[in-house]
Image (cartoon, rainbow, N blue to C red):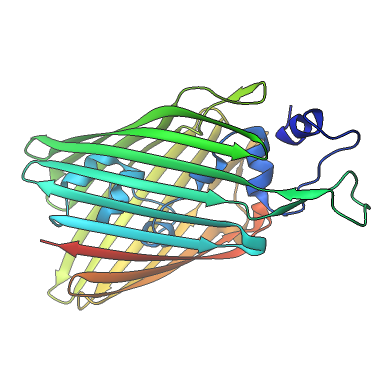
Length: 318
């Protein structure tokens, strides 16, 4: 049963509730909680085809593979804000601190639908009122390099969701593994958002667990030019949805980064290739000393969002 029908049973006299904010966030949230957590984190990784289980950098590693927290600068912070139409937005803050072979991190992710009009029919001239739904996810994590080149990470998560007059919370966790067999070559695996049941009204649902495995290869061709190649395979068991992603980053003078990626697979009753209109992603980044700014443009034609724009601000201190 969709959540829109739950709302109608909870107080409307007749009719069906219509979510007049078009787009897949509302449609997905009706069938499963925390659909916003399926939105990939970090403009750098998003511009590289939504890849990062072995190659995510900055504090964004918490959302890709908590084992990667052990790598990078001593203190890192990443801030993201994405605004879609009609007030739909997502904001996040991620922070990590490396302490020798150990690293600790924290994050907060907030998604809001904005105000949604409530009507008893599509043709109703006047709304009955308005409501919104919101997701909040908080995480505390730790990572450790157990032996040289092998890292593990764990994030404990708290989830809270509100939809109209209903709200509930639950707990979950992420686990990750990172292995560096050769200099510049990384392998990674993670299980993200493994959570317990949450209930809005009578129906139970879980956060959208995602399993990722993949690799990354970084190579410095000269003092002023370097590349990173990522390859990720993902699977969402509750949706039975696989995905294959790849991405490339070229760094020039350690100042400018150019990025591109491709997303190949999705599931719609049968396994299918993404259409050319949604296949490619692009991005760029600029870095100066301890601050960097990343931008990505990603098409979501299948979700009726068109071209979406992502911006991330990252800080790094040794």
